[in-house]
Image (tube, rainbow, N blue to C red; front, side):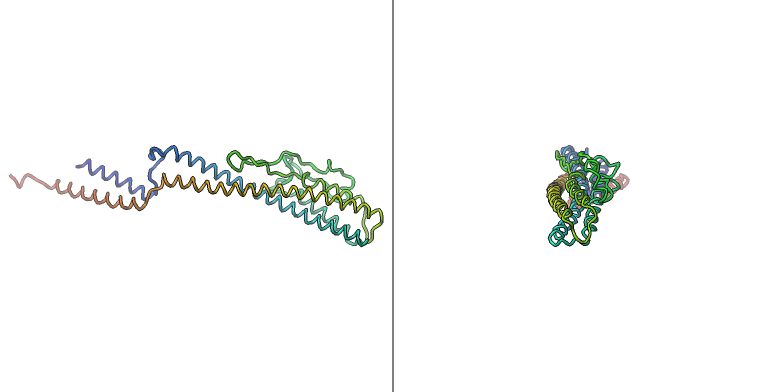
Length: 289
């Protein structure tokens, strides 16, 4: 009888623990045949969480790339339009300031940073990737001395077996545009009206700006394609994580409704055992003697 009571107490204790923890078992070993599957599911889920964190960071960085590229694009397109307008009218008031402002916009974006590290430097993060300080300096500094990045571009694992090279360097963005600004810088100071020599140089500069903008657009399109790829992989990863979580829950989480039923039944059994034991304990042979 004591053994039966002890067994009932143990079953009740296990059920109460299931109710408090919401789990079927106290450890993986207690899951029996599902142990290996659940250990594997936990491992894959942690990998998926790590890849999701990486994908989010990569997506943020590529959004920063896009913002700076589109800032350069907008500024340079406006400048080219102002140059074409000046060539058409012969009036160039404010054009010098517009050229210098657009150059500084490009310079600021090429030297942009994230967390104190240059965005477009490749692996050469100990210095800014673009070193020409002013438009006037551009007249005498060739491109191979203006850019200090390299082609070692950032790469990240964004899914199982998928390594994405997503980095962009300053040269790929700005080298063509820099040649255009060099041409514009060599025009000299532009006043309110254009000389014939300045008109010729500005026509050359406008053509180079158009070529540089084409290259810039290609870089931005490639960045956008990779953003879409990361977003797609992240969406698939979320679906996979939900599936893994469901596998884990099905094998580990207790059915609380059934646990409540078991708890009530086991309490009843234990109380009945106590009652029987109490009655047996009170029996005596005295009344039969």
